[in-house]
Length: 471
Ligand code: SF4
Image (cartoon, rainbow, N blue to C red; front, side, top):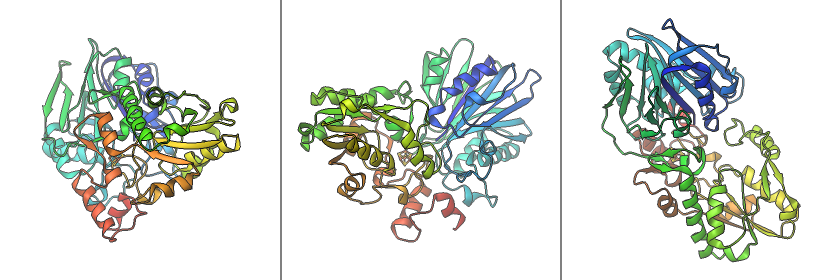
């Protein structure tokens, strides 16, 4: 997952940097900005780490794009400087310099080129640049690009001095747009637009191009018919900021509804009556815990607190790093743990390391029992579209692993997942990607890879990039 931002209209580059910092929850491995300077020349500044550390001059610009990077490819072992993978990337075209940042993953990149890219944003920039040179037209180039690419790609770009954004025909990753009197803003999430004073915010439609023309007006073109639209449910459950609204659904509101649905499951399976208190695993599950507490008539107690000096574990690149970070990430309030029957609530169990650690620590600190509830169903299959579980083998609940096995692995007294129907009901959108839950991938190449794995023709421990390599 990554975050992207684009702004048209006079603005200090440092103000764009502050807005980009609001997307740090979508990635903090590397960040970058590209802007058009007063001489209409493209400038770039990229760093390892969060946007706040990007080095920029005091300068006004009329067009700027930015990215926060979350690695799902390249630089996993840390043997290449992280800033090398930072977006935006650049390509010289006959229509001016193209600067581009993207969020998502392309499943067939290595089927399309002999060059072994370590970043699909770099690949998309170069391929779109080539197509612009070939077609002499941005819209036509994007139509051709959409025919070639399989996967998720929410793009913001500057071509010459023109700002544009484009969303893949399935609309897998979010992309929103809006205008204030002075600015047009595109972003992965509405939090940036809200902070920029934009009040009317729309979702960029799957397959839609929005660009700012020479007069500063925006033009919308439905370049590609939306097909098999599949918005990622995990944005609501885990990734997006609670402040943001995606597809007209406020993320905080959805999380409240997730808690309500989970309450039904806990009443049904009898866990509700066995607990003294509900303990959120901070921060994502806090909203769900507030409605869950109301529904079960059990107190919410923040017995696990976040150590604010540590990083979010899921978006750290290596497993070892995550294990270390899990230890540093949480602090505990013993008075609300000792002798209590606790229900800890988290947004997901991906590899299981954090949950296992929390259950163990709560027991060591004197909890009478530790039950676990999760605000989404078990992730059983790899994500090929930009979330960092690119192989089935990374998942503790992979394929048809029994829930009881996961419960035993994490050491909990009970484990309750939200059902798929509960999840769908809470999000209340007709077109969701649920591929990591049910194995039904919304894109052709995603389906092809899944079929080959199911038939045993491809190993479960290879990412789709490696699969393309070995094809
Ligand atoms: Fe989101 Fe899962 Fe689909 Fe990936 S496979 S895009 S995580 S729903």
